[in-house]
Image (cartoon, rainbow, N blue to C red; front, top):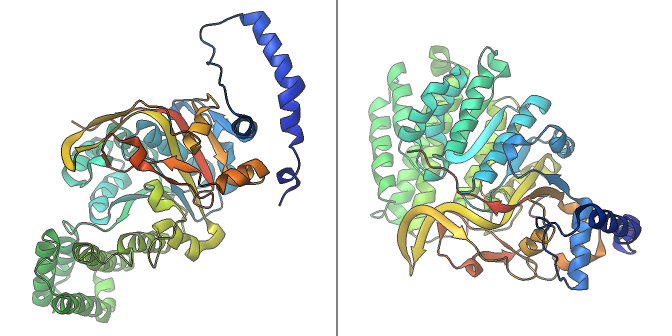
Length: 459
């Protein structure tokens, strides 16, 4: 443990004495009782120490992420060698989180050569959107988002601006220099079976009839969550998908000669994801939760993208819960799986907020009240991580968790069931239901916004 974890931090001691006294007197003389000054906080001594350490270590950021300068983001430079950087979100509908990830990706592209943005989005749908990104056709983005995207969460003005920037960035660049938008999720078979069939039809493979029968079954039964399948019939179905994959492998030389190595690998993966989706749907329907299939496969797809793009560095866009190095079931969350696979070559930036609005599906007494703007207008739970961060009275900042852990006060706080707020796509207007215990090993950094505003859905 660092020395700072055992004795008071000299910088903090100084800050709490002469420096703070000087600033207090100086501001009083010049500004008097300015009405815009933040309200005084009556904090208990232990909380005040935590807040002052946090203020001493944090990197202050403006409340508008798209206006962050390169200088604001230099803290990312120490992460620039990582193969995969996970960017989280505490809701699926906060504009600040989305704009921050846009700005961070832009920085990592321009300063450190990252090329892939892998979303918590359908793999098949992303192929259509990425084609427009590769061609630099920004005018096609909104239409493709509306017609191809499954999740309302990404059909927003904020994501559209990101994708349009990616199109603009790619204009006039060689294929090697271009950035890519890719999905790595596995919840739908809307496009996967037809994409495989189109590929096989064009090349007129000798096993077309077999491929067509099993892929039609995959598309139809995925929509029904394989509800009529017994364990035996589902295993037989998986064996047929595996046999189709074996047929592709057996004819690889001919398929590569008639298309390309990249085309073969891509469509082989699409077929693999067809199987992944089937398992995710079937095991969810049968309530077999011991293995977290979805996160396991999202991690595998992320690693596949790294190999497919010849080791290019990847930024991942997903919920805090997915990117976190969190154990869950046999395989853990996606971040846990990636952490085991990549060790120090994977890092995470979680996102938190305290109050404001966000887009989500409202619920009341287990009944959905519709998609719209939800509001969190109560102060954070007492002694929660969100509350402590709000006491800094900063609109936004980043903080390295390891830096906080090096202080005894924060080390103790992290081991006292410190809680934090986050929710996904559904909100019941009961904030207390969305607090859980924070583990400092979940994330390498946190980016905090005091106020959240709702993402803007495409009309």
